[in-house]
Image 1 (spheres, rainbow, N blue to C red):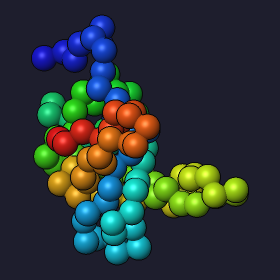
Image 2: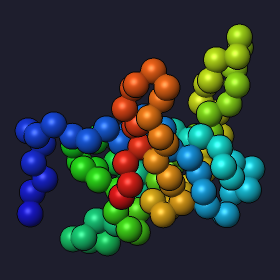
Image 3: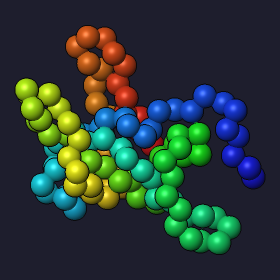
Image 4: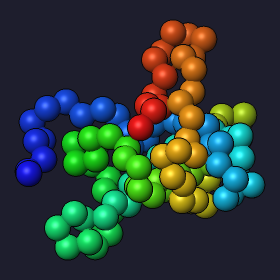
Length: 109
């Protein structure tokens, strides 16, 4: 079944979550940003790397999600770490809405 790309995609790439997994203790409980999604191709079984929200559509059980930790940068501003980790959708928790009323970016798979 072809993936429709003419519909507005849920923002996944660049969305912010909290890492609740145990595989990477260095980032446990920290905010992370999704950089890519690695998914098995149902036709040939190969793993494909997805960086387009329209192709990803939603996080699925079995995906490996490439995340970067948000760290304090210059002037106290958050920036993405250059080190990336792999997580399962189950390891990621949506963040609550920001105090300024912006909607949360993370979505439960």
